[in-house]
Image 1: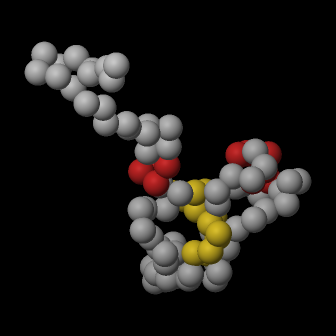
Image 2: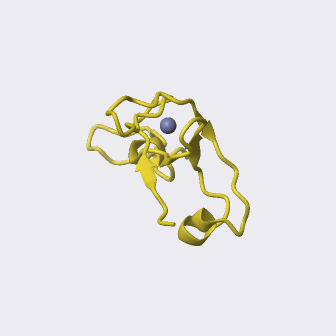
Length: 89
Ligand SMILES: [Zn+2]
């Protein structure tokens, strides 16, 4: 079985998968903790952040925007009139 991974939009909590009649599923998306030997683990590695629809079991990975700020921690520093970082003596 092929692994279907949809991308969750930021803030999305309901499944937007459509059934054969074109009706939205609107199932609740829940954080899914999969076993290390699941297909998902082979694809994404163990412990990745994955959400699963309660109704149709479609898998979602978090939107890129949700994790893009990781590792971009910005520390404001005092700057003098020339734009140089001010060192405290
Ligand atoms: Zn669904």
